[in-house]
Length: 424
Image (cartoon, rainbow, N blue to C red; front, top):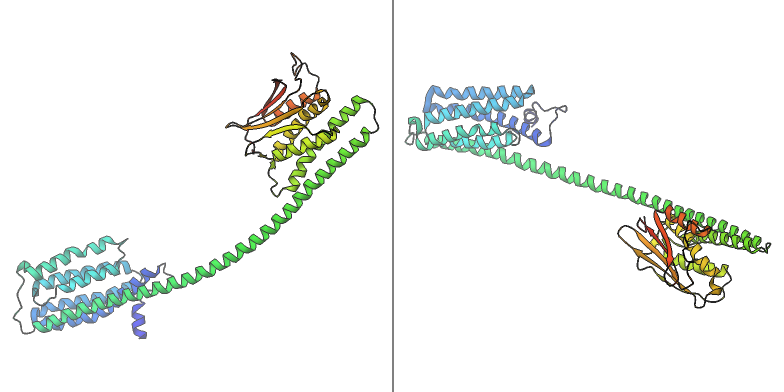
C-alpha cells in the first residue's frame, strides 16, 4: 500500500499550485502509468502468438510508461501526458492493422480515449483530447471494416484468450476511471460539506457581529435622540426666557411705539421657540408638521395680543404639510408678521377671519394668506412702505428661495412662492 501511494503521488508536492481536480488528474495519470506498465508488458506474451517479434513494440510502450513517470517526477506532467497518449494511440492503431478486429483489440483505443477525458482538462486542453479522435476512428475502421488489408484471425486457436485479454484491459481501464470519478465526487462532497460548516460558522459569527453592531447603533441612536431632545428643549427654554424678559420690559414702558416694537420682537422670538417645541415633542427630528405649527403660532399670537374672543380662521394644507426646520423657522416668522398684523387691526374689523392655504407644485410650493379686512391702501407698494414687517417678510422669503407679493382681493392677500420642495 505504501508503494502504491508512493507511485500515485509521484510529482505531487506541497509547493505545486494545483486545485483539487488537477491534483486528482495527476494522481490518476500516475496510477494509469503504473497499471498500464504491467498490462502492456503482459500484452507481449499475448500478442506474440499473432504478430511474433513485432509484439516487442509493447516493450517500447512499457518503457514509455516508466519514462512518463520520470517526467511526472521532474514536474513535466503536461509534456508527459501528451507524449504517452500519442505513443499509445500510434502503437494501438498500428497493432490493430496487424491483427485485425477479431480479438476486439481496437476497443481498447476507445477506453484510452475515454481516459483522456479525465487526464486532460477539457477547458484548457481540448486539442490534446481531440487529437485522439483520428486514431480512434482509424482503429475502429481497421478492426471493423478491415482497412489496409488487416488479417482475419477469427479462426486462430488463441483468439479466445486474446479476446479475454482485450476485455480485461478494457474493464481495468474503465474500473480505474470509475474509481477516480467516485473518489473525486466523494472528495468534492467532503469539501462541500466542510465548506458548508465553515459558512454556517461564518454566518453565525457575522450574525453575532451584526447584532452587536445593531445594539451599539441602537444605543448610540437612543443617546442621540436624547441629546437632540435636550438641545431643542434648551433652545426652546432659552427663547422662552427671552420672551419673558421682553414681557418684563413691556410692563415698564407706557410708550405705545416702544410697547408695539417689543411686542413684535416678542412674537418673532416666540415663533422660533415654537419650532423647537414642536421638534422636541416629535420622534422625527428631521421634519415638522407645518399645519400643527401654524395652528400653535396663531393661538400664541392671540394670547400675546390679549384677544379673548375666538378668531375665525381656516387652514388648507392638504395631506402633505411637513417640512424641515430650516424651512419652518422662516415660514413661522413670515406668518408671525402677517397674523400679528391681523390682530393689531382686528378691533376695527367687523367680521374678522382669515385663511391660509398650502399648494404643492412640481417646481415648489405656494403659501397664501387671505383675510376679509380692509386690505392695503390704494397704490401701496413695498418700496414706499416703511413697514419693517413687510421688509422682513420679503427677506425671509428670499432666504428660502422664494418670491413674495401682496395685493387686495376683498381683503389683504399675501402670496409666497417657493422654488423648492417642501421637504428639501
